[in-house]
Length: 316
Image (cartoon, rainbow, N blue to C red; front, side, top):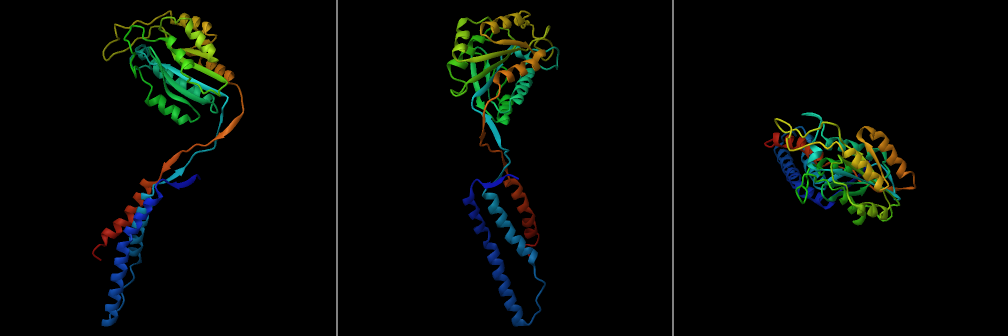
């Protein structure tokens, strides 16, 4: 069981206001007993249930106002010497698939990114998108849930769109930003960059290789591309798109130029193993983490039960 805490403990004082009806009820009961004694009337059965309900409503309301939360986080360890950044190509060609209703390249890229993240749980991992520029969406973190949510909610085709519309919007040369703009933490000695792309791009110049070497970044390309894939619109394939059969060779040449490696998506298991081996093993340290479950809705619902009893017997 995790630790229980309150986000706004001072708000529990609202319960004092709610106890005023209890005081009024007790005062009226004393007066009624005095009248019965004077008149010699017998005492009716005590209504302890109503009194308990009157007390429970403000007390539970005060607890709810204090916003109780349960920390369900499990102890997690992380490495400070290694980091992983996964870059997903988000140009329009990543909408291509083998058939209408089939998984698009981007959907396959998301699945590959999750598999990579799961293989190295003690390594901080970040996310970025690639069009004609490389933009960070999540700097390296040990939290797998944050990684998953960012991948699901922030990464999408042309979100944002390329700065300059082009037939070949993927600019792998913009990966130099990963080194030049310090996507990796300074203390990370082992830095692995994984690029999930269809490779439909012009070949970048030598500046990319120089930047990645200067940043001590090992680069792994995963080629998401199958023959005959098309972008399927509502009624028919997009006539403006043509799959590039030479993208695999181009990506292989680029990998060699940056001292990296290239895998096809059918070789994903080998790519994951290579990334894990490149990151290696290293010392770990505990990392504080919170996974809070808000209990206020449940406490509020519990307060509704005695409140219903009070309302039912309001004229008793």
